[in-house]
Image (tube, rainbow, N blue to C red; front, side):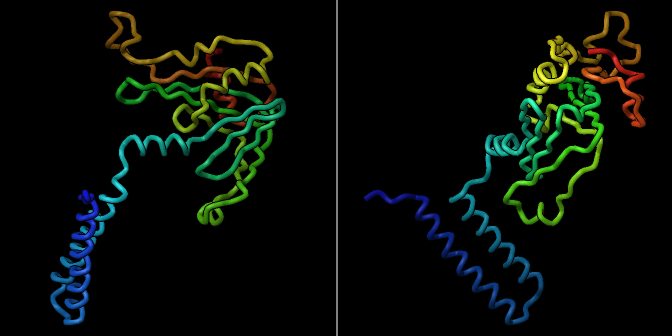
Length: 231
């Protein structure tokens, strides 16, 4: 009969762990030097870590990325509302289409100049409705609160359905199609014409996607209207 080597390792490490715990108890009872107590505890923790790693494994980068993707926000759309589903916060934000005053898209360049971040700013005329999950984790029960903000941000890192928002805006708000060129525009030295490399580089772009154009007391929306480029 072939014996699984993992089984042998488990027995050996468990045996050493039992001995280590016994030694730790003996050291503490005899009131020995703190150095010996610390060394004994550290050895036991190391054995526990090895035992866990053999049986459960250390999460791979693929598992980590999969977990990150799983916890990203998601978007849902219907005739009456845009819904932002947030697994980490364990709630859904319901934004009825008539509550949307304006939508702008900000394109920023990071320091390395390779990856561009896109973010929608959705300005509302009243706060979004927050619907909590039926089963909440203890920390969301204690700390999660509703938001009264009149601005909702949706970016291409935190939201896995970022690219679905533009078609939804066309369908439910604009009632017509517009070219999503603002989602392809980039800024940086590579986009500058020859001879202009030494001049200052524009590191952001702000585009109007949708705006009712009504008077507003929102200073940020006023600023966006002044500095924007139409999508």
